[in-house]
Image 1 (cartoon, rainbow, N blue to C red):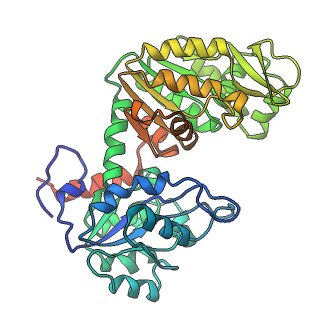
Image 2: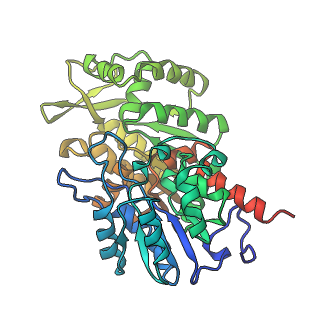
Image 3: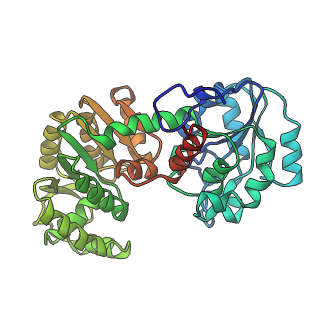
Length: 412
């Protein structure tokens, strides 16, 4: 361990000797896959390339997951190793186990410059349990693997909101530092979390209404946001909280997805922060694929809400153009359909004009990529749910574990 080089409360790769060390790296290669098992989007894997390139003189073993038990994309990481090989320009070998004798022997046989990807960590049952780092350190995964390594690097910000074996367990038994991607995510999102720039405007939408309503509550309690612009299913929840008739099909969507309890929470937030939470004035309804705009409160027929309306797009865009800090998470509508991309696209263009702009979430990043706006944003987070958890001020177990290791290492 070398001397700490920054004022950060966690260690980075700059703080340790990497050459010829045996390094275990938690990455997040979890990617969208088609029915034939092909990876459809390589951004997750590409995001780790800076960390992997910095380890060219090390002996490297990678751990990742793919999907969740029961999901169609819950599969092996063989194709991920092949794609990582192409992207990195160096061979990434694959081992179809995690900590068996065969896997451990494969690790022991590695030489300087080698990279090995172990099997899907979630194939191991205890990986799917959220427990304290002290408990995770006692698991078979950690106990069997840690003696084979000199260092643990967590480069998987996007799963660091989970207290799982491969995320927190090794921090109790190995020197542990943040990878390059992890460090960039923390540094980039801290500007949104601390909101030093004002006006600070958050655009929060998408379909994960329960998560986002909690985030809105946390952000407002901290007093950091000047405006929160609601879109997507989140906006529908707030419309219903205002007593608006959103139409039977939209009310049923909220009920079927078990979001009805969020309506009462949203109602309390609107009463407590009436000037900060903004709800759409109009929406775009999906009438057999055709865009049909309607004022909120005048939603007639049984048509699903598929986007915000043009009046709302104009109003929201004006608010965003005046923002010094913008945070965008979740699409404004069903952007996969051409007639309902407008809200997401126009708000992203406006958000990109802020002095400091942050965007996160897989769907959001896909649209940014399609629009060619990547260079216009100050920080693009690969984190998805983790990025919005971080911005809400919730503790992140994976990051807390790195900070705990650093504090133990540099006491006094």
